[in-house]
Image (cartoon, rainbow, N blue to C red; front, side, top):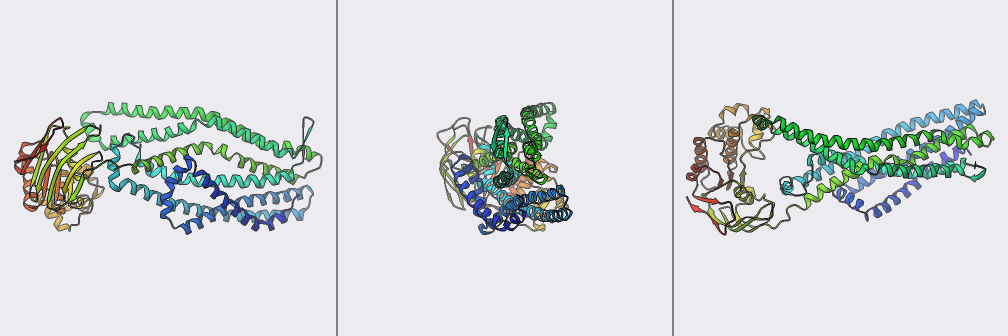
Length: 596
């Protein structure tokens, strides 16, 4: 019964055979999963990382991880045989045998420690490398083609993009490894410890009926029934945990918006309204949390009961044979060990069910992230031809977000040195027209545009963006090449000389600089980049008229060949432009510019 030496000698061949079988099983399981909706989502998220990886190194690391899983199972199997010998020697009062098995178990402990260290290192290496590739793919998809901007125009907007990139990606990688390791460990352990229990089991008498190998059958029935009930109790957790992630992200995003718009809220004294909005979102989080708690009360209570019963059940099942002298104390201990390990293996899906609901929610969120970005920029766009010396718009029609035509048959022509002022009431499409010219408008447009290349154009919004870092980095965003002397000179021209000594200081410049100073920084960028096409969206709205005139004259003098297109409301702007265009509330059959 206790053939520990044969088990030890066959360990190497067992590992090789098990590794081959598991590898084949994983491959076949992958093929079957690929036919399911879940598998297709998983492969859609994982495929870019696989394509960008060194496949030989990745496969080698996967094989090592599989070997670590199998080695852990094999160590557990050997552990039951060694403990069988230890307890049997105690029962027989064989001191030499006891110390022999004690020494073997001590050596096995050392092997376990070494195995745990190597396994942890390999697992972390795999997780980190995968996470690096997944994060790179998500950032690339999010930033390319201005997707980070275009995505806000989508009706089915993915929620909490920052959370998807950081938290969901990390937990998806960890969850995948835990799930795969758990499944493989559960299956291999089930096979191995079923074989051990089969050898330890004899005839089980229940209510006068003798059942050969009855212990094994009873254990399987017990665990399968427990698993079915557990799944039925916990099934609603899939939806509840998905809502948990979404609602928590919405609440966190609202807090971030409060921080980013603190000044405006303070001016409006909007604290009470903001608190009301935040409280509503937090109440939704709490309501969902209570739903999860109520469902988990039943699930945890059931799982705890099953676990407690499992602690004494194997002794009760084998007690008849022990008192009849058919098995030793070592056999009883091995039965308990094998039963508990088999129970853990068969209960994997039951105990992992709650974690899997979260995993499935993260997979759905990542899948939604990638698919949404993939379908951006599919709208029909006006034909664009590059000419560095002119800007011509012919029969341009722009569709609004609501599907209706916003502007129709827009026509104008500008050559080097010309300047066009676009005016009109709010909501008539002035900024939208500028976005089309800048190539960042995602909705349908038709017509023909001849303009300088995107690399030789500069679009400046009403409020300039400055990133974190030094003031020099903030002004030269994103990649303006300028010496410190050049920068100081241009800052002086734009009346920002008081900051000349602070170029290398790191502060939150977006908050420190006033709206007017931020707009003057926009003109610093114009003078440093010297673009062929300058698009200004109310870029002087926070400046007094004298400063506005000085900056426009500075640009016209420094960049006489540049084409300027401005959006603004002030009548004083007309004197700085050669042509004007006025947009009305409704779509017009023909919109053309007039000479100023």
